[in-house]
Length: 278
Length: 287
Image (cartoon, rainbow over all chains, first blue to last red; front, side):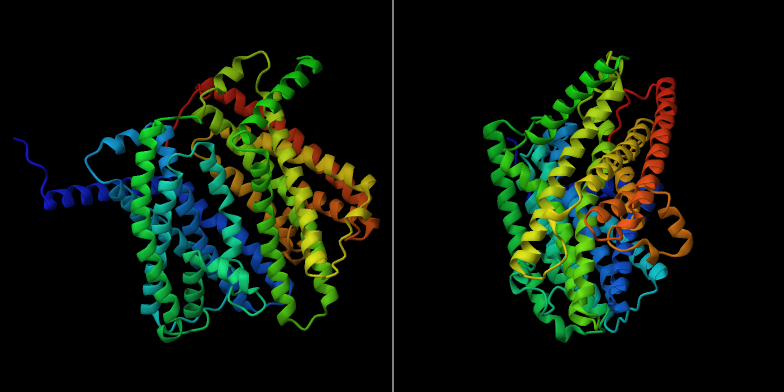
């Protein structure tokens, strides 16, 4: 008689799968120094253009600091879109998706590994963007509460990558739509999140836009981080953002799990899990 | 290769390219996708200017003029984005994903008309984005927000705009041609190439601020880019810059386009020889 795996064994297998997927992501993304340098240097081109635009229209230097933080957070959004949401699409195109499907681990552990590897990789790049931005554009920052910065940053990433896991399941059955949808979710999210604005929750920004932007966890996290590192705010003034980010995680993570199961089952029924070149 | 054959091959390539890029969805959704991205880019810069106007002491006339200048630059930058991103990915997609680059290369049509045809798809996509972005801008900023920005789409001088756009497109296709050549010999650079070149053009081409704001040595680089003169001539045809500069800007656009064309052909020949020597036309690399 063959007995099923114990909970402990099952958990161990899933953690090992997450670690393995994280290791592949870390190793794969950091083996090429040109790619690493370009992922840090390229956003500086766009950030630089916005900093000069701010200067042209007479906005203060702190607005430049806001755009550097926004540019760094955009690196995470790009990673979520192209390396989380579209990942099952890439894996299917390369013939790996069926291997994940037959592996004796939860697909969530693979997504968790991707998220951990992706967030670590992007954190390195985001740090590079911020440091290079400060060096090139000489913008002022004032951090009075580093613990809160770390907390908000961690919560923002957790919420953002939970959203990435949800998208990954929704994108699972996509063909060329995956590419186009990921493209579509770039600039509109940069706009709605206020990544390149001095502040999204400013009175001049229409209320409807602020509400729409608040549906994206990055908007909430970005606003809190900016207030902490540019205005020198403390945890007492950003607790609503902290609560909102925790709520996002509690909603998005279970939703991603349900969605993944549903899409996997749908894919099996329709025979679309191994389709390529759609 | 006879001109008629070249045109025929380019036309077929355009047809294939158009189907690949557009038939994954219905036309309305496709048009929506084409407009949302450039419109969002436009709204980002427009809101920055509106925020600037709300906190600055400068008069609204300056901001309205700046916004019109910015709308035209951002709208026509869609050509740059479409050509650079589309053409830098072309070789990667056909070689790695569909695995047909070698078949196209050994066909009588060869790669040249194929790349031109596919590049023209980017031009059509760019044109859709430009037209819709300008229309939406007029509707939002003058129609809904009543900002009275000096953007008169009916008053544009087509005799100035059409030569500028044709030359600009030729220049961009020549640069895209270079990116295709580099993609053939490069490995895992397809995403970096297009983003780098479009990013450099965004910063140095005078898209969202005048190049006079750049440091002196950097301005020298801006002055040799076709994009700088493309956007200048386009803005002049909209009456947003002194029209007296149009002839010299158009001449400089022509010269920089010719240089880009010559460089494109040179780089492509070099890449082609290297690819044949090293057997790169059917190289498949994964991430």
